[in-house]
Length: 478
Image (cartoon, rainbow, N blue to C red; front, side, top):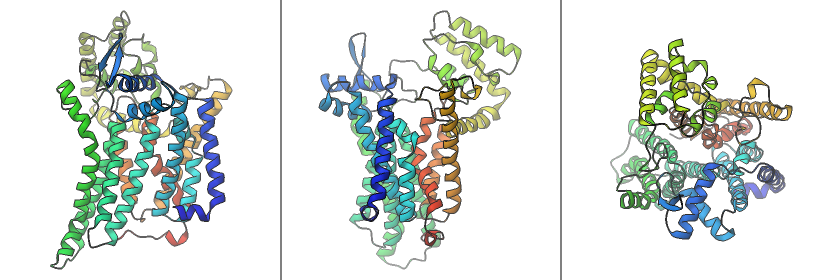
């Protein structure tokens, strides 16, 4: 990649400055320090000052396992250098991580497409407002996207080595170990980083099965190792990805007497009840981020207006009355007791029996579509109900512009995938996007930011529209 940059120094300088300017604009104009940011900062501060990975509760520091240690460790390192709760320093450092992501995306496109594709990918990533917006948010996304792109870039290098050698060597092992460590960093930031491990591991097993079916190997040790090399690489990948979780798992065993290698599914602590009934009822109707903001995040603790529920939340007039009464009872003290949760569970069970395909197929598909196609202005001032056209003109214009821009990115990626369908490694990128999207469809809280980890793939696929003609028929290695 350095050679490409040297050959096109002016292009990368101008595009890089534009990328930096865009990100600094968001940092200074729309910095986002939200509730999750403060929770991470509280954990980081307690870890740094008291040696306890915990949260402050009524003046007491309580150990926690509700969040993985990756982002608190990042914050603790910055706070130790630049001062406690210095979120401005956090955001500025994230800007440089995001610029690194742009370079990694370009290198990924160079490996898969061409030098021209690398330049296109860098420019598309540099000017992507969605990546830039989250660089200005004290959340895990920017680091997660960086390590996801690094892992994919290393995986493409490893796959090239697998296709070009018949002798396993240190180079192949080192690349897959580095790829595994990058995946491990993803997992330490967010538990859904494990989807990347599943995608790369499954792809390597697929390479092994293809060799098993198609290769006519001679009776030699070199041929034997050539056949097994993808399996060995998958093992090294898994080792690199899972080893960083060992200290965290041992800590949870020692502190909480629980085998908890990841954060809990609902980011709850060991003594916090899970609202299983309410969560299941929510999944029987929720499809959009607006409902997450207005309903899901506000229970328990805040007043809920049943009028904000969409019509799909009821299958009958009787069910609408029952739901309204349930919320009226809840609104008296805003506490989701086990009794209330059981009533939500009963509602959910009845709705699932009435329309199982809706619950297991149609609603997950709609949640996936909402996460991919929403305007991505959740960190910006525009009203989340932008389609009602009652926001101020500036906010409405931003929402429509972001919606159209997001559609352009996704549309260009789909068109690019069609052009690059025979490019080596494109199957891995597609598998990652598919697996992640399917997983996101199972969530109760469809937030657009969860698809941002797929945006490096989106950008590389879009850059395929600009790859050189000589690469157009680049075939997968046998």
